[in-house]
Image (cartoon, rainbow, N blue to C red):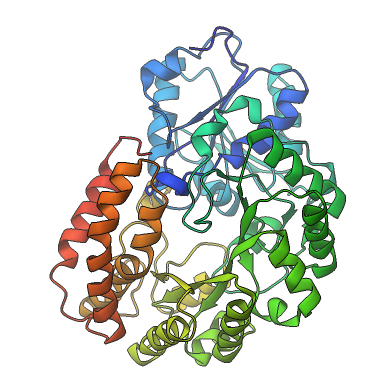
Amino acid sequence: MHLTKPHVILIYPKTGLDFGSTVAPPHACLAVAAPLDKAGYRVAILDQRTQVINEQALAELISDDLIFVGLSSMTGTQIKHALKISGMVRSLTNGSVPIVWGGTHPTILPEQTVSHPNVDIVVMGEGELTIMELIKALENKQPLSGILGLCYMDGPLVMLNATRPLMDVEELLPVPWHLIPVEKYIHRDMYVKNSVRTLDIGQTSRGCPFRCGFCSSASIRGRKWRAMSAEKSLDMIVSSVRKFNLDGLWLRDDEFYINRARAHTIFEGMIRENLNVSFYTSGTRVDVFLQASDEELLAMKNAGAYTLKFGAESGSQRILDLMQKGITPEMTLKVNQKCKKLGIIPSFGLVIGYPTETFEDIDMTIDLAYRLKRENPDAQLETMAQFTPLPGTPSWDLAVKHGLVSPASLDGWCNWLFDDYDFAGEKLPWYNARERQWIGNISYMSILANALNNVVDSMRNNTLRRIFKVLARPASAYFRFRLRNKFYRFAPEMAIVRYLRRKIFYESEATIE
């Protein structure tokens, strides 16, 4: 119960797969909360992944002091939950409080988003500066026409303002941790298995200069990579570790290691501070890693590097070129060997079902995956994720060329990232129904074969973790055998997996820890 009613409520809806170490702090909300909090506004952050958000919970926070309610949303299931919450807010306030959406999806499709009856304003791109101008305009009943980065309704008209230039990340405020129950986001982590207190502390850089065709980062932040100074980044790391007694970190930058000199300075500082912490990265480029010197890699290891995540994507050079990855399967194999020598675990992400991709291409990806595992038993294979076209990406245009039809309204995006089976061919129209089923089978088998043990390792409850570990071991071995030998065409047991996923992660309103 909030004793003092907030001026602003910021909400992070469920994403559809929220449990254990997958539930990171709601940094999208924290980022825009930081300047509001500093300016003296009372901010309440609600995270539907860790708490129930219903009409009663919202009603307790609503008062005449409330200036707006903000929601963050990515493409897919999160839109479904955001729309439901927006509807509750609209009903409780009789439409008197503006509903503001931000995040990747509203940024890419602002006009379609704001056209929904339960959305009033869209903040496009980075919101820290825009949100401050917006709240002052709403407080003083001033027009929104001069605020960069806004899309809004003016009566029946959709008004799209000019975009806001990217901000200087050196000016980012510290994360306002006091606005959330931080302990809920400190976990055992599947990528740092020697840790029991790992936290995603936020980004030390933003953006990515590379051209991967399936990635929406450029649509949000352009192709410019912007980073905090090594000194500010190190202070953020050191203060977080000591404040929350962490033994694990998630460095969640899109590409932490682009500027190797900066990264090296940070690693040397972590060693000097004797943090005794392990970490993993969200993204490390295969080609950039191969350029690093032995001295640089040793500093990374000694600073606590436990797992590095690489986008291997495909075993087919044709598909890699189509994706504009700028790498080869041979380079991925070299990274695998280099990590083995260093004692750092490489975690490889793979994608299947790209436009024009044949099953011969897909089988090459399966072969690459198990060669990586054979040559380095410690290597982690992430899911062979079914390609899902995202609006605003080059691969979207390619998908449209091959028959993709975009949803006509915001509601149409609600299950865009959920239905891996894709019965209707909505997302993969370049395959027939049987081929789409095979791709769904491969994707689910890869989860059960490769990721299941990691998920179990990250469970908080020790008893449940031990029980599920016993059950997961033979299941993983069975699906590894099937996938390695490409027995994915006939898999009736996948119907059970799909049913459970739909019931637990898509239809359920419960929160899972």
